[in-house]
Amino acid sequence: MRGPRDSTDDMAALIPLRRRPDGATPGERLSASADDAADTADTADTADTAEDGVPDVRRASWVLPTAPSSTSRARRLVRATLRDWAGSADGETPEVAELLVSELIANVLRHGRGEPVLTLLLQNGVLRCEVEDEARVPVRIRDTSPDEEESGRGLLIVESLSRSWGVCPTSRGKAVWFELAVRC
Image (cartoon, rainbow, N blue to C red; front, side):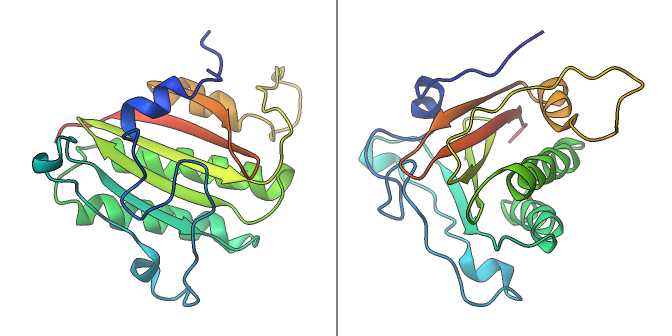
């Protein structure tokens, strides 16, 4: 059974060592849009050009409110962003990404602190989804028997459906991430 990987090495593979396209460094707080109705308004979708020596990277990020509606909003954002990235995701990838992001957002709302920050990164056929919050509490998979309650299985789902996942510390707290292979 794979466990979380607590390393920033994997993040470096997807985020160039220089600052992110919006000027933030990995783990920095990202700005929120005041208009929740316009989900695309708080999207920072960029693609680096080959001239600067950095491979193409697509990135979108949002600060979500600490409200139950953030789980469904996160699913809509993932679906819309992958659709906007014009065929950047194949068959099941959008649905799997939506499910796993909603699990991570639900965990932040239940166990975390502060507003969740959702970030999607697409580079070289790998979609990386991160959910950051202000809690520094370690994340762990709960061993549950079939007789136990229904909750507590979110990270088991993340582990079984993603190609890899992990937790990394940030300046705000922590980011839980997963990766999915996509055909571009």
